[in-house]
Image (cartoon, rainbow, N blue to C red; front, side, top):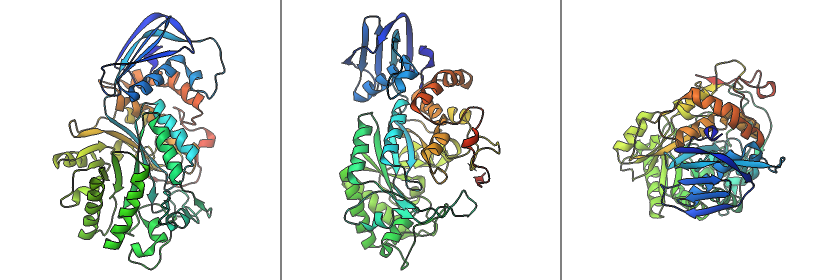
Length: 455
């Protein structure tokens, strides 16, 4: 049974016998790599040696896996459970094992975000990059600027697929400061850092609709379409002061050492827009945080040290490292989980390239340490209008990504697949995750007639 764990541990030593479950867990400190743990299980009890609080959390997740799928249910439905005896010693390959969740295009309730945090923790992922603002919605309450949510927090309609048709259904929602503090604390208790993102100077139509003076037109609407808007923030001192205040409020809520400011997809941007990005990055640095931007910010002159999210391709990450920046590899050619999972016509709203489960499992970043902080999967939500759609697109590919992010050494998909199919999918079933079956979508997971945008 020890061979069924996901992600695959560094070292596993099965021993004869078992320990009854539930049993007390004796937690002890240990000199292990960061986030590392060692589980020692024998008929007399369970000892968990942990390098730190994260190591303890990861060790407890492994213990759940060893108990079996029943340990992942909200309440136990069987008695007489046990844990196999043995020793598991483990630590992660990368310090940053992230997943972006886009709650701007389609809002996810607080309860739904907390559920997603639980799913990340079950896979020993440790960063939730929360994409809070975009052209289609502003999800972060800033009391000083209430129109950001009263106006920017909802839209009258949404594009259906990528064909241009509108569904005519109002969509909206936002998080209060206390909602976000709760999400941050809940994630921290599960060894997950929440990295918030406020996107500037593009992807800003929701902010412009709320406060048109931030732009160059007298009026804007929250965008009801998908794609890249040409509306940019006006890079004036008043706009800069506005967003300094927004980020300052963000810093009061999110203790993350890294704060994301976007900087991507800005058609028509000028030198003044690039200066705007630089000044906000320097503002975050002055507040003791490290700014993170998408790889387009590499075109900003005199860019201060940042974390670069290399999304366009891996060459951008190599360029960032050469310029002295730390890098999180998240290229759309490999780890964008909103992209379609097969070329079959039944795939719902097919977008982007085909990224199969095997493709995601095989991902290896081109960059190596010391500039590589880690890797991140991306769940953009233009076409994910419900938790069921998020589940379908994210899983089980996120399970494969988690093993690639955690486990060192060569990987063999033929060895991984039966572990996933026979042991890990039942855990997802117990958690209520409506993942994509390995042989294709179930009838109710299809979206007949809704056009996508395949590449």
